[in-house]
Length: 357
Ligand code: AN7
Image (cartoon, rainbow, N blue to C red):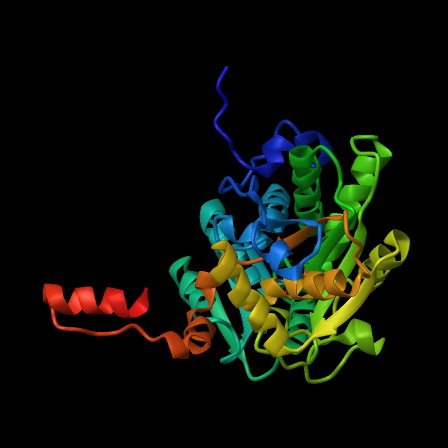
């Protein structure tokens, strides 16, 4: 019997906290492609298998949809009429979309002027109430935690445990797709929920013998927003990768445990390294992710080159969000390859082709 795909809660319902009576709020998220890189490994001159899990192909363009289907499903089950989050952009878009789907209200606190244009546009379209603050994500997060004690709103940031439950399904999909867990799993780390969720998923599958191994978890941060490298929260995070412009990660302990238990590590990368990785993925593989997402590949490339990740390894990099979300940074990256404008005649077109072959 043919079965139409209806999202990750249905697919993994026996591993998620829902009952037969739960009304599931879904946009058919999950089931995202694993794309094996073909050209970048050759450029590195190393024998490695690198797969990217392209989470930018979720319904709102980021991995947040995995957590949000679960968090909003549970909020509605518990009778909530409104959800709230602080966000660097993607959580707000996902919260807004799933609230629209559920028919409830979404309030989002975002740092004024510091979220990518596409994320702002989609959050407006989904009709959330956007509250811009003169402050950063971490300040927004503290305010959200406080206001939830004073107003009837359910927090849907990743401190809501249902978020991580939904997001752990990405690890399930990877194992179900490959037939094994990778040797290394590389992720960008901001608020640190996602690395915690993946580790939870891999541990669960390994415990139930769905896979025989668990990956080494590698968490990569932007140099200007790298509290895990500092060893403590930082006050004024700054990076071009606005999605991970976070100084006080809420899932600190879980992420630290993921790194420790898996034998993994954290590292940090300059904005320039991150943007180079983003452009390489687009230019050499045809995969356009947002800047923050490329931090996973920046890290993998460095650690493969140095041999810290040895030849023969199977590596998965999560590409957390879609490049189309941040057109401004993309355009800035491509100033040297401006479109040419010509007269609308055959000779001019011919010349434009021959000049550029
Ligand atoms: C593209 O949207 O925190 O370490 O408020 O959007 O689980 O926080 C976004 C985070 C990586 C970091 N890549 O994941 C938000 C928000 C992208 C992101 C991260 C985010 P976590």
